[in-house]
Length: 235
Image (cartoon, rainbow, N blue to C red; front, side, top):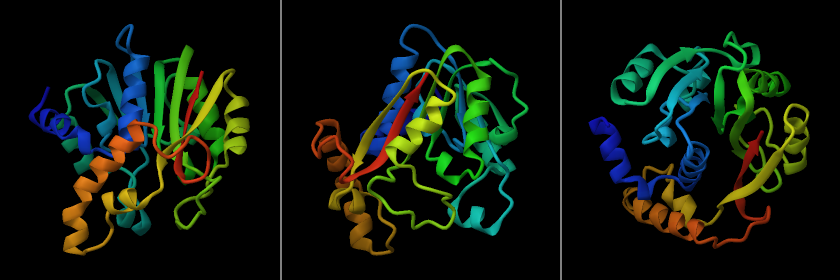
């Protein structure tokens, strides 16, 4: 384990609830044996820290001003930084999943956290995820909850409602389960501050910690109202 990974895990109790859930689900997938995991659009791939598995990250290149502004896409500097600070990331490739050159049936699991809403050709993306998975492999993904949240972001092509996402995934996978996740409350809004206010910044970490604890306890219900994200597992 690298120094960066040790420090990150030491503070993981303050990580975003969505990342904590993804990490927990990946650990369940690798419970019986280490896997070959492909993290599409993972950039820094923090939720794979501490996994026993062999992780490959892919992302599209950062080419536009919008990507620069929103910290999207990969740069050579980011590739080098991630590879130097991670012990289980074995490769970081520039690749577009909608027209990927990756070898078919080469991964046990594919993860895409908050990626699909950025993709115009979502059908091609999901079809290629299925193609690079080995028989019996799993696709774990998250996306904003279109049953509850509007689509206010200029870089988001769409926000998926549960049934829309289910139908998309079922065209390429036999088993699909989708859950609602992450409370949309004042604690969450203060925990991920976008403001320059010093008060917001000081209160952000405690608010996020409390929001995470409540999320783990199941506070906030399981239905679409008030939940920010969808978490899907397809096989």
